Image (cartoon, rainbow, N blue to C red; front, side, top):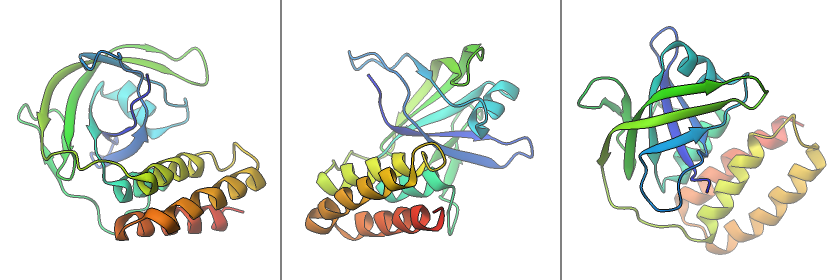
Length: 188
């Protein structure tokens, strides 16, 4: 099963790198190991190859997911070191899982990185998802496919998602979708 989340790693200069990623996880709800599948051109892959540890975050904050998908933060999100000091935890997350890399298979363009959870924590309760949050999540995934999928296909799918957002969104979802829609339009 794929579980959508955010990964924090450190760039070579020590700055935080925040990236959306859907790791493969066991369906039993026990998150002890998981597999990340970034492209071999991604910052997450480069960072984990250099320093094999990071933090996986589970959040219902779709604005944060949207900003991470297109790497556009007006203000960097607040972060804190986890208690072991080996990873950066987003302060606006529901759950987090610090991890270490146990294996990397980079023989294909889509790298497979097997990770073992070393520490975990709860920050706040999961508020939940409505249809607009799901639509923003799908729009964020589409935004990461600019340059991979045909622009017309992305535009059509974004238009379908916009209808859902217009019907069911709160302020956060509207802001996130507007950000993604502008990004996709600017990339045309």
